Image (cartoon, rainbow, N blue to C red; front, side, top):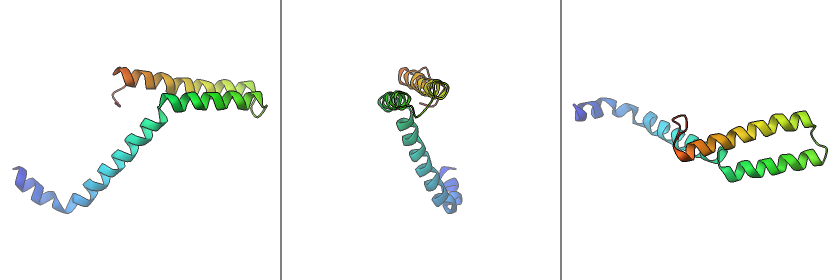
Length: 86
C-alpha cells in the first residue's frame, strides 16, 4: 500500500514540500518569538520607552503583561509543560 499511495500522491509532492517549508518557517518564528533573551530585551526597551515618555503607564502595563505572558509560555515550553506546541 505504501508504494501505491506514494505513486498516487506524487502529483502533490510540490504541495507537501511547500507545507514542510512553511512549517519550518513557523517553527523558527515561534522559537524567536518566545526566546527568553529576546523577551527580556523587549522588556528593557519597553522600560526605556516609559522613562523617555514615549508611552504612558497604562500602555506600559498592557505591553509588559503581554511580554511577561510570552516569558511564562517560554518557561513552560522549555520544561515540557506547555500547551503541546513544543
